[in-house]
Length: 321
Image 1 (cartoon, rainbow, N blue to C red):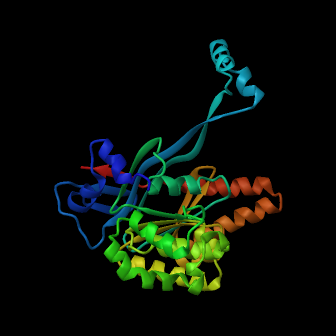
Image 2 (image 1 turned 180 degrees about the vertical axis):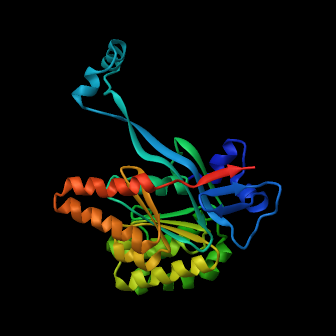
Image 3 (image 1 turned 45 degrees about the horizontal axis):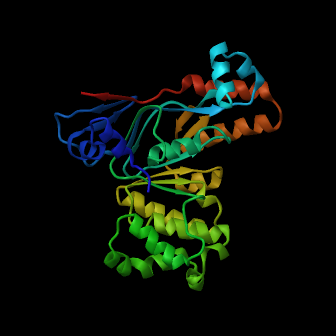
């Protein structure tokens, strides 16, 4: 399992989970969120997830000749000596601050390469952000299409392994195993090896494992797009249960219908920039219009459209007092 965001905060001298649950009072006042250590936490309207000025920059090798040509002579010599390609900075995620409250479901949309999966990995603790901090009320659980399953063993055995990895005791697993198996909808296929499953069947199993322990913060990266209608209906019902139990859900998807049916709020990313964060209908309409203009090769109109969102977007400001 990956390091949780609160573990990263501990390394910086903070325990994010303890601070968020016991000391901090975080109130969303328009564009400002204040963390006040002098007052008790208002548990009736507290956030489940806070991202404070988070950004992500990768250092990756590049084969572009222009990159090598522009290097100082001594760097050219070093790269030539070690026979490595020069490295460049790729800004996958620009500075972003958001607050997701308990009971909220945040949808994240954007074109390929916009930073959606990077953001989901930062939230879940799989990536350390280049700048900023991630605070959560519990250890986030990431569910993605590439989530680890053991192909050679059965779905039932994978459930047991997954639940053990989540920290459940064997007695707790034995008690809840029939319920989890039933929630997958796999029937007798639950006893077959995973490598005999379709992508939709695997998605059902991953979702059942990820939601078996009511995570306070559930991050879903594209995993709901591969199931059938019955799976999507069940997953939406389960997500509603999680929100009703004071959890929050972050859903990354290319499917407009999935976002509309599952999310109370939508964040639109483009080339790592946050463009809009708000009502699903309004944000999705703007995003659909952008894709339509690109498809019609009306590039100037598309650029003007996206710039109108970029210039009006303002990050939430997190203040500690």
